[in-house]
Amino acid sequence: MDIFRIFHLQCARRLPALPASHPCSRLHGHSFEVELTVSGDLDPVLGWVLDFADIEAAWQPIHAALDHRCLNDIAGLDNPTSENLAQWLWRQLEPALPGLSRIKVMETHDSGCIYSGPA
Image (cartoon, rainbow, N blue to C red; front, side):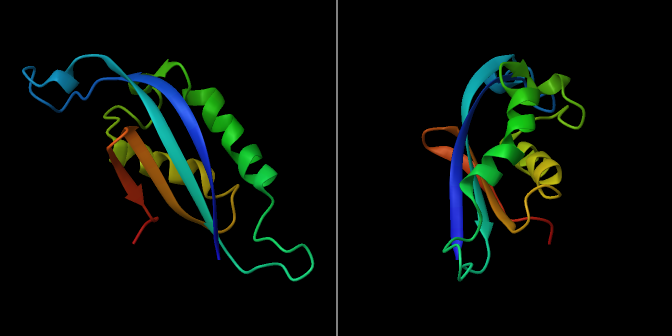
C-alpha cells in the first residue's frame, strides 16, 4: 500500500548548464510542490503503513535547509534541475524514511518529475 504527503518549498535557482539565452539560466524562483510516497504493508494493529507524523519529521530538516534559499548554494545542487533535486531529496530522506518509494517534484502547476530511487 502507498501513502503520501505533500510539502511546499519556495526556492531560487539558476540552471548553469543552459546557454545564457535560456531564461532558466538566469536566477529565478519556484514554488516547488514535493510529494513523498512511502510504500509498505498495512500494520494489522495500527491500521496504517506509517504515521504521517514520521514523514513530517523526516521532511523538517529538508525544509529548513532549502526553503527560501538559492538551491545553487546547497552542496550537491550546483545544477538544481527538478530531476537533480528529486535525486538529492532521495539521498537525504531515504535513511530516515523507511519505505520511501517515490518522490514527485513539481516546479510549476503542470511541469515536474517523478523519481523512484536508484535503478
